[in-house]
Length: 145
Image (cartoon, rainbow, N blue to C red; front, side):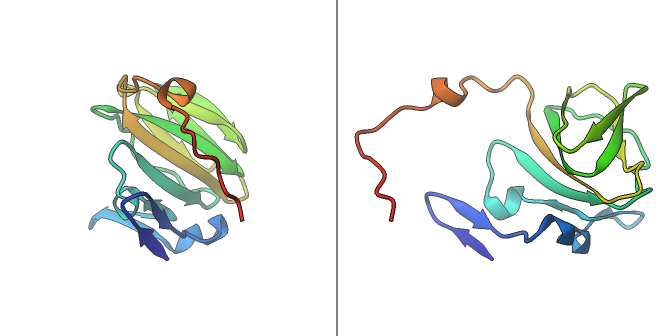
């Protein structure tokens, strides 16, 4: 289900356990099962988000860097491991890792259970205001039904 208005966008991905049905194939010789990007579906203008499900033994078979976007990896369920500039960094449910643009990176599921994680991309050093400094109150109160 997808809903888009002038005020918000909403999509339903379903349960994380069902992410395996998504296939990301940017070229004929490279395919990832269990990955979906939501930037276009949500109409995001400041970031990219991907939802990922890696089965045991699955791994990104190459290292990569980013030109402008830092990445934030958030482990939702299971365990995995990142390779960051020749350092192995373990992840488990609740782990959050920020990766700078010029850092070599790859990720794998080195456990015996599925590994679910989110990846957020945003332009490095672009955030000027956040949380309390970016919000302002209005007189209107919520009318919860």
